[in-house]
Image 1 (cartoon, rainbow, N blue to C red):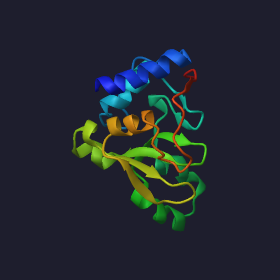
Image 2 (cartoon, rainbow, N blue to C red):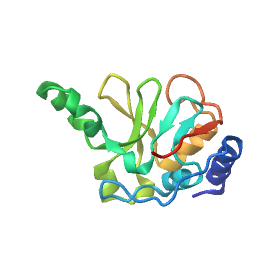
Image 3 (cartoon, one colour):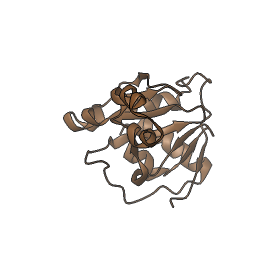
Image 4 (spheres, rainbow, N blue to C red):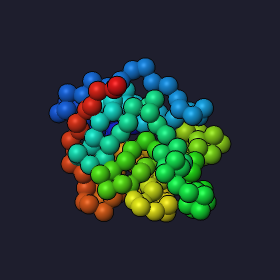
Length: 160
């Protein structure tokens, strides 16, 4: 993890009084990106800017796991391209952010791109070439969700 990212996470932690969470483990049989694990160690689950919500590692689910019980067979076919996206964050607007499991399985986790699945669709968009870049963009106020940059504010939430 870069010093820049660590500084962003520590700034969020200081203003939020987040406690972080330990221990962390990988999910779905794959190694998770170190920048994500560091974020969770320092801050734990909660909401960035009151808009983007991060679940505890033990609650990570794929796009298919989140939606398939609510879908008929025709819709499940449409879900196929994003079915294996392991969702690590979701927005108030319904955006989901994650990594393709097949990427996490075949390449170093820190090199995997972050995918945004648009709300009410199965369209995916690459929003950052790595998880570290994703967090750097958030910390710099990039508009990743069409609502403007998110405030550098974090509200932690206890792990249940």
